[in-house]
Image (cartoon, rainbow, N blue to C red; front, side, top):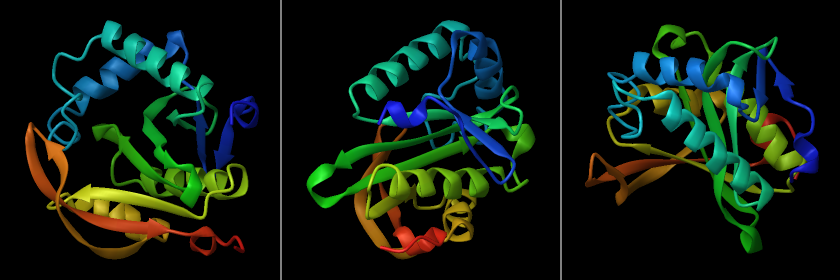
Length: 188
């Protein structure tokens, strides 16, 4: 997995790459700016998000990538410098060739199609480079923008799962979407 990420993933006007220390201040700013939108669904994203918290997250991302247990990347503008958000493949179940895909985009850049393009780019990587056969996108019920991204990226809505996610310390139902290789134009 790590070898496949020596070069950034580029596609559809986005650059997906591991975070580096130099991204910490911009990441923290993106998180603070997004507390009212992203923070509603992801409790880590709050008004006081610090550079130290960003660096701690980057260390976790790096360790998970090294351990081949998750691929958590930054979403950057095409040139690879402006922090637009984050995306990750995680919760791998190797025997079934599946995992979860999660994403967020900073508030000032939402509704520009960034998340949709990043999801398609990451899904192609998961299928073509990691050999996955199914990628799930789990969205808290009520998070319409995230569900819209899943649909626009080619994911199929499969149903509502009770008590599937914990949001703000409370178990909530979640919509389950799935992608398979042909969702992004690849054959199985």
